[in-house]
Length: 72
Image (cartoon, rainbow, N blue to C red; front, side, top):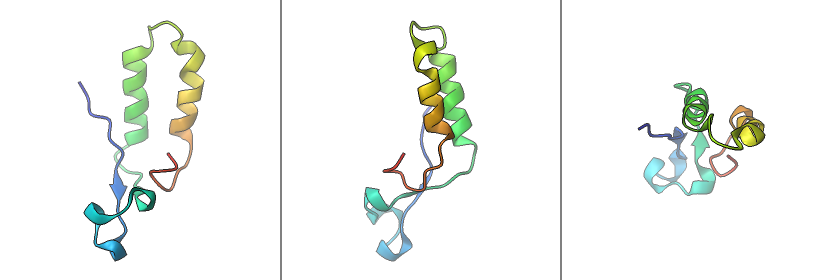
């Protein structure tokens, strides 16, 4: 079992992470989280029916550059 989380940083002007609205949360690109998420999805679902049909769509999500959590 593996937790798939996206590292975020809140807006300091609004009082830090715990008070920041979701639309203002920024994604932090560290710890290879995109690669870890993708590898977990492949390991769990690669042998399931239809994975090959949707894999490219999911891969594109993890390859995209997103600044904010809400955009992801």
